[in-house]
Amino acid sequence: MPNVIFLAFADENLDSLPALEEEYNRLRELLSPLDAREYIKLVPYGKTSQEQFFNTLNQYTGQLSILHFSGHASGEHIALSDGAGFTAGLATLLSQEPQFKLLVLNGCATRGHVTQMLAAGVPAVIATSAPVGDQQASYFSVAFYRALVNKKTILEAFTFARAELESRFKQSQPLEVRGLGFLDSEDPSDTLLWGLYTATDDPWDALHWRLPYYRDSGLSELLKQDIQQRVTNNQYIVRVLDRMCQVNKDITANYLVKYIDGQAHPVDPSNYLDAVIQNFPWVIGAQIVLLRQKLLARRDRLEQLLSTYFCSSQLLYFILLADCWEQKTRKHWTFEVSPSFAELPRSAAELKHTNFCGRLLALYQWMSQTDLPQGVSFFAPELAEYCVHLADPDHRLFKACQDLQQLYEQHAAGNKFSDWATVCERAEKALTYVLSEMAFLAAYHFLTVRNIFLENAHTKPLEYDLEMGKLNTLAASSLGIYQDASYRRKSNYTNSKSIVLTPSERDLQFALPLTPFLIDANTFLGEPLPYLFLFAYVEDDRYYYYSVNHDFYTAIEGGKGFDLIHTGLSKEDFMEGNNDSSMEEEDNWMDDDFLIADSSTLAAKTRIFTLLEEQHVRFRSDFTPYSKP
Image 1 (cartoon, helix red, strand yellow):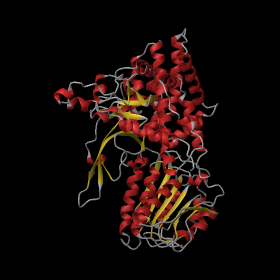
Image 2: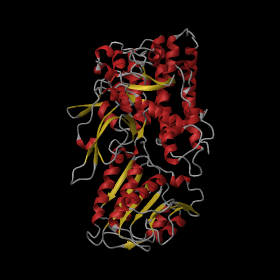
Image 3: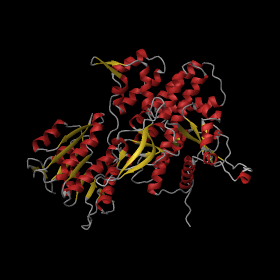
């Protein structure tokens, strides 16, 4: 059943609120992409009459999740565009909505409605304690929904909007949790006027609700049948598309259907696997590309299936570890002992024996017990759900990971399987379950951000021009740096020389940096093509990375060339594939006689990954127990 977001805007005094139209347009702009993907049903009215208001409530009975009002109001009534004011009956109507979550009253002094709404059973209300300025009301509203569409909870979005308002309008007010819930202060000297209210004894469900990030249906029955009938190679992996299309409706139109004379037809069967590859992040997609090349049921196919499992699990672990690091920094978490989940492998042998599913689960469980009583919030809520399933012995994800881990360990121990066809099919089926649970990644954007430039025209606000491109590609043949200024120019920025994960590539304020755990080496080399590496291990104060363009076994066991690199390399070493280079200075005994130094050689021997070393040192320091003086 769709989650209806009803935007009811009204100005009965005919343009007495100049910012109201801008607020309305911005909220539609923010929420429309979710409507287009069928996550929500957006019902916007810019000039809402009383008849429209109640007709809409009746039309979407049983489907309403958020009701947002912006316009003139008081503690006694809400004014609609036809001048009608009311309160009676609204609380009763909303209390009968089974999936209703939030009422937003973005007008003047609307707190008078709160008691009635909460008493009727409305889960959460955002209201104001005094008259508010038109610009302030608009700014708060836009900031709140910016956070909400970026997968923040109601509580997080409210906190973000208040902080943005405080920063913009130079006001301050502490956030408090009181008897009725999460309330604003009643001190008349307070100048930041918005409050978030809940009447429940346990406000968790109301405050930690998010907008939905998937739709009920994935592939159409026609496409499911076509896959079953026409796809012969990697058919189980292709079935992951059903889950991917639940979180990203655009996959069907962009990859799975072609139009001939205006009629939709299924694409060539090979396109199905292309769609899986292109819509997973490149770390996973690159492994599936290799799986396509190893079709015969033998040792190399099994290794590629296990490599895909290993790299995918490691990627999820690094996403959650980066999230933990960011929250620790922001919330000032401390440790009594160094957590085991933050201990990075110290050799290639240790890396090979690392169970990243186990580490991921340990990290999730630690974060879940931190930051209580409000509870920790995860950057990717779907990843938290993944971990819940991973911990459930009855869930298919738990069983699939157990099966793959067992095969991985048996292979590492040198077991020789007698029936390659059976074991490869077993591994592919298990991997399909795992990748299906990872399908939420198709709704995120992996971006490489190389450089940031300031755009500061005198007549415009400060903007940042980001040299960045997507890392969800079929083949790393081109980076695809954005040329469109609307994609490159941002009012905020993220880390340069970094790979970031974001729900929206248009709003990087909510992006999560994944470097130094995942890097684009060519960012440091100034080369145009993307060249992705996952962190492997630290040894002798050098941080090693392995290329995701080959299977894990080849990259690690080869140990030379371009598959395994470390932070001690110079650009010359990297370009020559010289992984054993020592950075000790050469004995240039002739230089003293000729008083000439080869400047080009010195420049080439400059180490290029020192920034990564600095980031790793900071990470290790941040996860070292704090000792009080």
